[in-house]
Image (cartoon, rainbow, N blue to C red):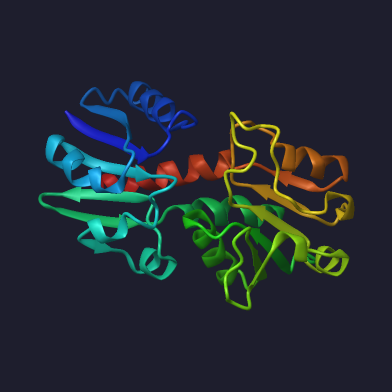
Length: 245
């Protein structure tokens, strides 16, 4: 039996098992199984792999996309540059890390872009944010990082630094944080929603709930809105290609 799975913590919000269970059933892949591995500490990774010698591939989610790196034998060029891995392929005694969030985000974002979408605010600085930043650089879209824990870099600001000038200039706003994700559906990133306009594109990497409060606030201001479901589907299929290459 070929074993695939997802590691992260917690995993109650994950759609991956349902997606791959359906895929295996639809494609009559009776020799494949997908499991959720909710590990509380990344140091449990070695034990997990030792106990599951039939592992062929793992997806990686919050909070381990960056901390998994030292546990992997080889890391792709893109994942190395990003500094985050969300896909691991197992071959014999080796592991190779990839980042398919890049493909998922890029393919789902491009159809939404308009000529005035030249600058972006990226909310959050974690592993998913790093993939988003990588794509924005490829697309030559300037961006500012926004964090509750402001770093010392000139490209990062605090939420209370976002003023009318910044909101007018940065017409793409991407939520890369878990704020607003089920079960905390009444939470939202602390941006000045009253300054949103129809020129803004709000993209939330969260897909549960389908429409976060962040997106609902944008919709009230006639913004273009997008959740992370399509990104999830695209990156899941990219994972599958890598696991079976």
